[in-house]
Image (cartoon, rainbow, N blue to C red; front, side, top):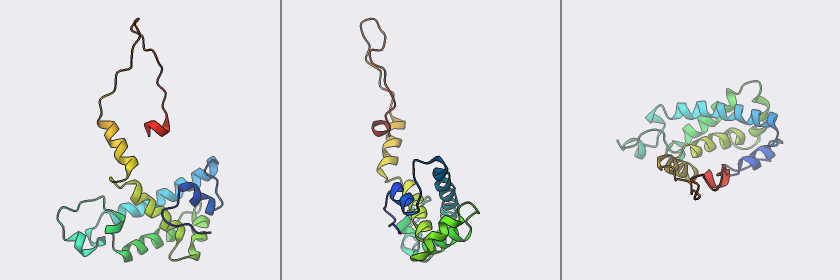
Amino acid sequence: MAVGPRASKEEFMQALGLNSHDPQHEQYYRAMRDEAILTYNHLNEDRSNLLDSVAADPSTKPPYFWHHIRPERQRWGILEIARNAGPLTRPLFARGAVYGPNWVAGWLLYSVFRSRDVRNNRNRRRGEERGKQPQPQSQTNSGVSGKKEYYDPVRNG
């Protein structure tokens, strides 16, 4: 079962018959994502991959957005990922050859573009947090911190 480019990682992995909580399956996912990152990097190296209207704007600098890449270059990137898949990931990419160029490679490439998009809320929050000064912890009368702070991935992103 294919999933669309905006499906969650869990939906994507489930569509491939993988479990996002299984460390072995997570290794497969990371290997596939690493292969997609190579193509992402390649697409960001050359302005000729951009739509003419975007390429003509001198203020356009990498990293580029997915919707700024020419559709034929997006398709090339998807096919390139599947074509160059390593022995570990090749069977997983082969499952994606049933719809369009390759839905597995397409999801991964789109995912890489989105995760590096500065407009992505998670990335923006992380960037804002890096720029903030650390907040002092409240202290009791004895001068010792009153409450131990723990990392919470939901709140601390």
